[in-house]
Length: 182
Ligand code: HEM
Image (cartoon, rainbow, N blue to C red; front, side, top):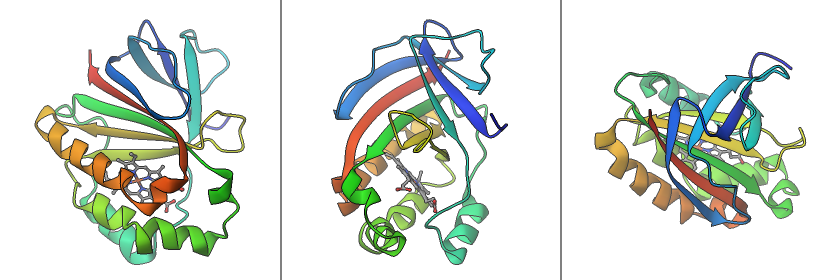
């Protein structure tokens, strides 16, 4: 597979220690003590209890002005101060995927203000979106966030406000996995 594809391996070893794992909706995932993020390869030695695979891709909804705002304020992954992380795998419903692109954008941004809200939390929260629909995975997206311990409360507020939006009416499976660097 391509170099933009990564395996999130849940098991008994890995650089991230799992401190909490909640099923927000839908079927849960087996509880694991650790998580490793590895370049996708059939030769990965750490198989773990489960592996979720996703790839980075081009943006679908963000418009030019939004992209410019994001690029201007976003921070990189891997900051030494960002010892907290969240992996939130999400699957949306068939009803969502049956909508046209413009209808989805309308719900995502015009009605739910996903990007506008999220921008308020940058650069404290570093983020990366992995896609996994159409590659035989149990989720459509693997969302990944890194932040400093002092921003953990801020992240809770963000997650709570997004879950109250119309966009989340289309989320049918969501697992919230919180981690710290071990
Ligand atoms: C940290 C602040 C955040 C910002 C700035 C942000 C921004 C964005 C942007 C710009 C996109 C659209 C990418 C595109 O155009 O394809 C996106 C997609 C997405 N984000 Fe966020 N986001 C944030 C936080 C979150 C959180 C906390 C969650 C989960 C709880 C989340 C879940 C998602 C999902 C699932 C998608 C894909 C939606 C779809 O394509 O249907 N985001 N985000």
